[in-house]
Length: 234
Image (tube, rainbow, N blue to C red; front, side, top):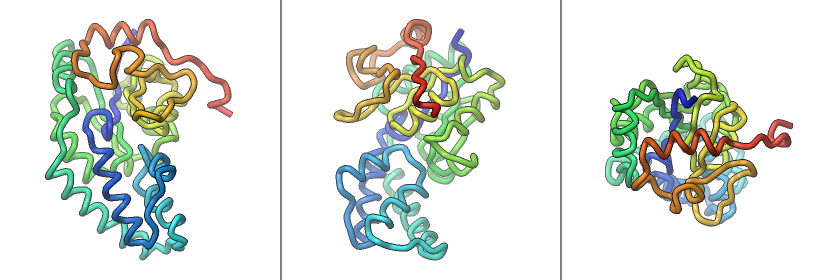
């Protein structure tokens, strides 16, 4: 039985991934070497700390604590600016959350984004939809580690196997799957989900929540559980 739904935020509830891409480009240019398309794929869904590290390694910069803090601070300020200007829920999200909430479904946001920025996006979607939220600076290891989803299940008092997760990034899908959740993926065009993950495109015919109902969600959980893939756990 489906007992809780855990939502990724960036790229799933809100279309913020392009904004993070803008900021990553700006940061990498400040460091002296712009990110390649391949490296852009690697930063989707990872922690902010990992993004800074990828940009620094690409530019040949050794990250001291002071250098890291410098880029961390200016980049958070820039993301906050873009969030205030452009952030909005993805199509169909609020309608689906409203229906699920009316049914009494416990739901949480689980995001690698730090609390300071995540709160802006959660408020844009509607904080009242969620029982609780958990952010990247509130667990020891962010996605793709399973910590966040295991912690979310504990906070809701349910088993991870009774949770359904919606995730757009490969890192997030791996985190949720490794935690034992069922996962529905929303990968960007050209990015292929890990084996065993069913996508929203396969279930709904498009990578959008527009037209998705609570009945659909329950049916998907019952008929399309994530398949076990042993090599994920090696």
